[in-house]
Image (cartoon, rainbow, N blue to C red; front, side, top):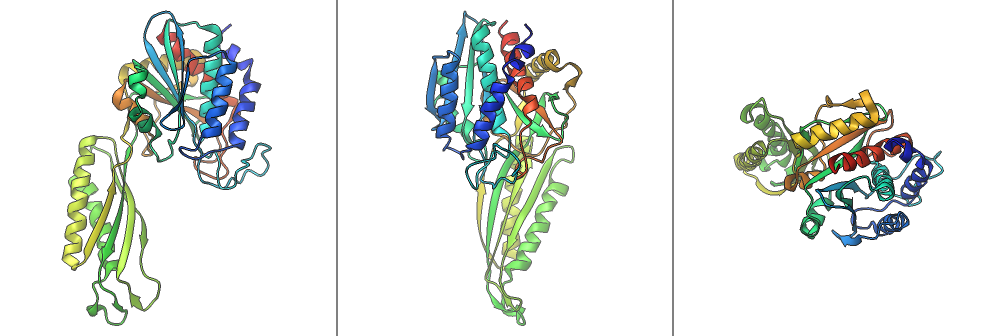
Length: 384
């Protein structure tokens, strides 16, 4: 029986797993019950090689049949601190202020579906490492698992992951080599000036005017310092200062993000960022405190593994396999794996749903068996 037919035969089970995860969301590094449910299901499938607690709440299971390569398949498990607004869903979140608004409930379920199929058929030669990862949403769960010895204990030759994409036709599998998602560095700038009466600006060191100049000057890094053939985004997303209409405040706070694909551009942007902020504050006579946080690296697919994954996708969805999805400026901590191991990160279309991180978002159950079949196909094809 073809992979997709066999996995489709237990699609209703998968939907029930997904709805369970959706009803019971857990935030980063608190996925205790989610991990417990994952382990419970893996054991039901007859999988015995299971390790818990990697990267605090991560789960790793292995399937082995004969000798050959070892590949990793990864899914993320954490939810977001968002109040769900899908009141008409019977499986709406039971945890106020927490919901699966990014589809990790679906990602976990798709990997479980692949695990069930692979454990039953064992139609491969080698080892499949099933990685259920915590804390993707801004807390670097992939890095935590790596730092906890994941790749030493489970030395994999290649790794594959997948994320749903609202707006992309349901069931489309989009795969391409090269940059897929951006590196994301974040910053907070605290400007310390001198307060004064609004009618007496000459007595002040105005942090608002200084902050406005910083915002404008930072854009010159993109337009005048960075190679125009490279991608760079510098966004100041918040500017907070003052409370009264006739008082120049003492301080102001700016925060934002820097996004890029090329590490050399990231180094340039960081260097110029500090130079621009410090020199602008010097020009106004203000003091400054900068908190610059290095974020996730860029997610860059490896060519050989991407071409292979695309061929596997064609077997599952035919002409719904796509290699023309444009890269995005969002970020994803699967990038930490791709820095260590060759691999590929794919998109699966979620159809015309609400966007990711939206309180009305919901994962599309109709693509569960497609995603599971794709992951299972990668294992079978790569370990044939």
